[in-house]
Amino acid sequence: MTRYSRRIQKIGSSMIISLPVEWVKGNKIEKGDIIDLEINQDNSVSVLPPTEIIENISEVTIQVTESDKESLVNHIYGAYLLGFNIIKIKGRESISFDTRENIKNVTRNLMGLEIIDENSGGLTLQFLLDMGTLNAEKILRRMSSIIIGMQKDAFSILKNHEKNVQRIILSRDDEVDRQYFLLVRLIRSAMMEQKLLKKLNLTNIDILDYRIAANYLESMGDHIVDFADSISSCKNILLIELNDLESIIEDMHVKAISGFINRNRSDSIEVIKSYKVLDGLLNQIKEEYMRQENNPTDVTVKILNAIFSVDKAAKCLKDIADLVKPVVNVQKK
Image (cartoon, rainbow, N blue to C red; front, side, top):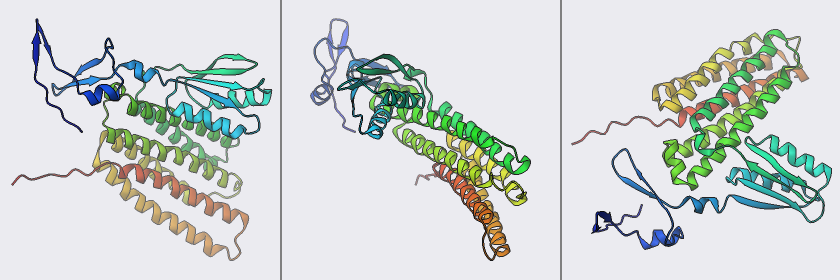
């Protein structure tokens, strides 16, 4: 952080200080521009650059290449995550029906992004949510809530042999991804716009931690999908041992998210202890099935895959708990 000192001058009834030249040039501020001043809780004053500077980069144009549809999808995701409010997609000629459908499918996966204009030469997408009304904590809690529901549905396959649960789990995983992309967009936008960062009431380190925690949750959703896929064909086997793990994982999940959001180190420690217990149980189950099968069958392989997926999901919770910093008491001499 660069620090500047300025002498206060008085003109009429106003108290005036000059702005650092480097800051003025770096933000391309000119005579007549309006800047924002914020009084912080510690009674310091923050000087924010004009909002027009942010708005100037809120539109991007993507050129359609019919031969490379995957690249187009990646460009749309990238523009969304980088915080562009308007994404214009243009073709050198008319855009094919298949490409249009592909674009529309991508749009459905990105929360707040809507098609506001469409013609033979292209489409215009616009982000319609107000970033100032979004809350990182609420989005993370929403992700967590959906994944807990996925956990319960996955274990219901073991308990009740319920049909069509896999489709429900996949649908919920898609919603987790939508929330994840929205949170990443919010974080990136906050890093570019100090005014939004202050509104979120998060430090730069907090923002980074939220990004990492959200990534772990998104990965956890994928592992639950893998778990459900592995056990879905084991309908005639009641895996009592795996059922016993459900309560442990749910307790880990609740404490990991609570500990992270509330910076509660005791919760995070409990999660880490629970993971050690869970890891021991998983190893016991794995060894038992390996002893029973001299020549592993397809079912045994699926069970082992299910154990692996449970372990991966639990590790995501442990990693979230590890983000909570230990409280260090500094004693003054």
